[in-house]
Image (cartoon, rainbow, N blue to C red; front, side, top):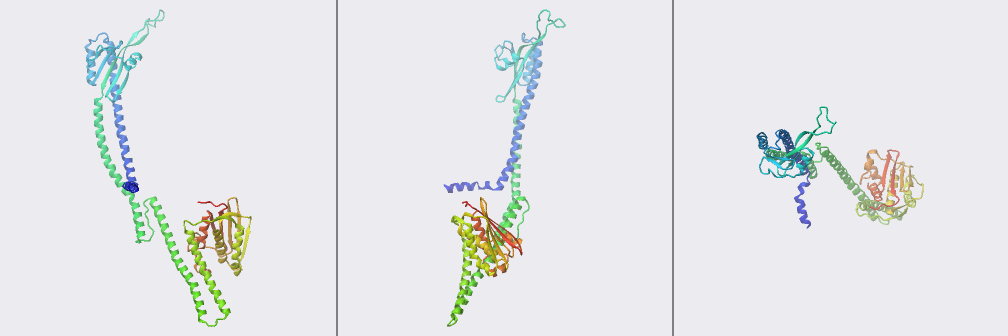
Length: 499
């Protein structure tokens, strides 16, 4: 089932591409307004043509309605003048005219089929009652129906003493009948069909043109992205290693800048890796060589004095301890890298733990006459991994001792609020150059390679420390002045936040 879905998805893969989406957007933006415009124009033409024809007919019918009263046609339909006008109107507009008297009977029908019949429709009755004409357009059957009142102005009788200035009664409009006219809209529909066909032809031509424009435009717009992909492929294949540049769009600039930064980062990591391999090879090889030399010296001598034997064994033990330190750092780094790295969380007395770590490190500080001071503003207990927390404190304090001046000092401050506890490790050491601050957490990075080799270490300590802090959902910051000293600030939640 999954394979079938995969095949279907691959068929529609094209529509996931930016080129296809640009093409579709340009195509729709071009064609939809054309379609809307076409139907809008045709609808507007139809409404306008019907409105004009209705207005013309109403004017003609009002004139004929007046003639009907003048010639008393409602009483006597023998007037040839009226009959000729009705026939002319019927032929001119391809319509039918029926004259209906006040009794709702048809007294004249230009079709000659309904004379003498009674017509009872809502439009006729309304026109007869209100004396106001109206019209209705039937789009389905293609005709306009118009009702025109036949109005006679009569003089109403008035009561004695209420005569007008001339002694006559008031004039009053009386509806004597209705003209019911049906006008065909075939000519409008024919014109509409012609316009529709021409609009359709124009629309097809526009469709072809817009299709071509959308196809070309999508290709042109995608060219810079293709150049970006090609340049990245060339870098991947190893044909080029200089920074790539595609400044056509702001988006391509962002992509290229991000890639160039990544490339620079990879170069830095590769250089660091090479340096690390060289350093570790040297560091691992040196203790083994020293141990071999010392052991061979002992084996080459007979009756070795106990003092000399003890001295050699102490040197061998120091070299083995050095080797063990390098291997432990490497193993710690590997463990930190594992996605499944476990956190053994327990309630830790941070004050007591810091005291224990400093007690272990004070012998190292005494050799260089460096004073180590611990100051705690309050008792702190936190949910943490005791081993990793020990690693954090040990690495930072040990670095502060190693990279310090003779007769210098190291101060450890512990404080806490309601959410976090804070460790500040300050020293009077040699400091870190500003340009190196952003790199000190990188694996294998060393600020002063020659000095670091004299002191020992692998360049993994701060990388391990930072990972341990982040695993506690904490933060680590550093500030330093060359020649004056360095301050590391570690902030860790009092309550462990599980991911």
